[in-house]
Image (cartoon, rainbow, N blue to C red; front, side, top):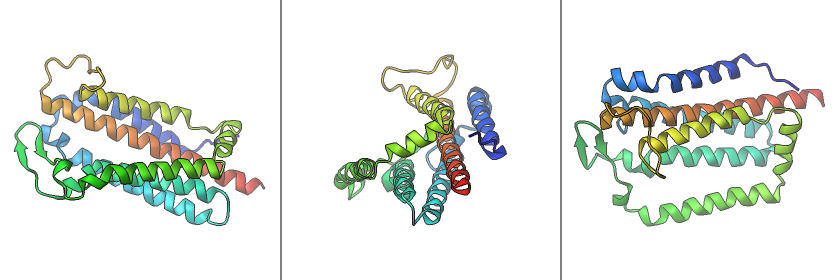
Length: 220
């Protein structure tokens, strides 16, 4: 089966354009674009929320089928990513300091509920893994693979975004090439653009999977 959906193609192209724009956008646009609660991060939040709503709609559509468990897992994943982008809620409070280059700092370590964040996160991830195993969601993956609709391209794009973001922060012994003339604020823009492309790729994967399930349901 081949899903020739124009929206999937357009989102792939948009993701590629974001990657191609990393260096010029970081060089020419204001560093404020890369700040916490800045335009790029707020766009990430909107995208995560749209992904959450879309998965919730898919769950409603499939509420009487086994796919409801699949979409329940996806909803939980978008929920985690949304709150991660809010620094688990720290970004809802005033910044502790504001750096003229990299913007406000919102340390989650100051949150009164900080001690329970990671236990709850691991509990939710464990629940996702449990649902995956108990409801045999590996069969859903096999189905997508057999239909030649496993979103391998989108996952590749998402992985690239994660690598770019990690390298921009110089974590895991990674670093971005050709940034010796870039300021810390400009590199932060590249980090946020990498994350934006990652979320867009994951949303595209979700759309592709949804369209595949929709097409399969019409043929049965």
